[in-house]
Amino acid sequence: MTNGNLYDANVCISCRERLEALPETISLTAGEFELLNRPQRAYSFAIPVRMDDGSVKVFNAYRVQYNNALGPTKGGIRYHQDVDFEEVKTLAFLMALKTSLAGIPFGGAKGGIQVDPRELSEGELERLTRGFVRAAHTFIGPRIDIPAPDVNTNSQTMAWIVDEYANISGAYEPGIVTGKPLELGGSLGRGEATSLGGAYVLDQYIKDSGLQRNELTIAVQGFGNVGRNIARILSGWGYTIVAVSDISGARYDEGGLEVETICSEKEGGCILKEAKSDAKHLSNEELLALDIDVLIPAALADQITEKNASRVKAKVILEMANAPVSKEADAILARQGTVIIPDILANAGGVIASYFEWAQNAGNEYWKLDEVNKKLREKILGAYTRVQERTLHNGYDLRTASYEVAVERILKAEKLRGNL
Ligand code: GLU
Image (tube, rainbow, N blue to C red):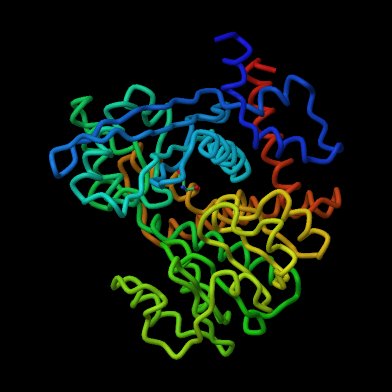
């Protein structure tokens, strides 16, 4: 293999495209651009797992530490059959921007294992997770790189990571991951923090726009932890949630869904299609095209693309998933006048609360729930204000303004370190 090929293997194509799409007013030098368009470290692992039937399967896993200028890298680890190296690089890039924008002392990272977790037993998932820690333990650590939950991983996954890391190192180190159960050094409020952060941002945006909570209709796409909790919080604050969807389809009631009932049914293991409710059945695509005020994609990437963007009627999109709107869709929606509150701002509540968890682990002192939530509100609305100021000052959309603020802080740190 030539050096040229090795060089190419490090580049993140979609990160480069995202940087190239920035307006010329955000002028990056060639060196700054080169530094930002590739991850600092990108690992790929092959993890053998003994399956319940005695056979062995080998799973592909990735961990990408995109940029650590601002501190140890930070970001979730997801289990999904479609995970690949390029996607993990892109998500790690978004994490680097997210932590920078949030003003917390972390760089950005992401991990992923290519697996459909529904096809594995609990025991197989545990062995896979422990296998990942054995493969990656020298590259992670509370002052190096700190994983957390993401798509299809949760506090149980984090508990296995803490335990396997302790088995290897011989010492209990809860700050190795965040999103842990409370008994293992987790933080109050971490489970709902992504949703609560997004709700704070949306609510502030609505206030700033001179609108009233009870006048607005909202649809939530994706009914996992993030989707369910944001539906609950916003409906508790007086917003009307008219539609929600999961992988089985959507339910819609133009007068407003009974959010608590539908959430409890889902938490009891019922898919939305089978939930006992008078609400109408819709497809996911129909939900995306509803005539509503706010659309909240809270599932996976690339849900709104050039194929369906022109059908979106919502006036505001709150990106609770990472990268739910494709680059092409972004341009179509801008022409339609749809306001997008971007992922690196809207869903930063999770990593902000992870920072609080990590700080509590380091100080061995644990905070009350209202203290966590108050600090979360301050941090995320601080980021929102920085973005809004930039929007007003430079006439940017919210995504461009968020990127500019985030990129500036990373580059400042790189310059101070002498790397630029
Ligand atoms: N997976 C979450 C995210 O995408 C949280 C990451 C973290 O807490 O480190 O922001």
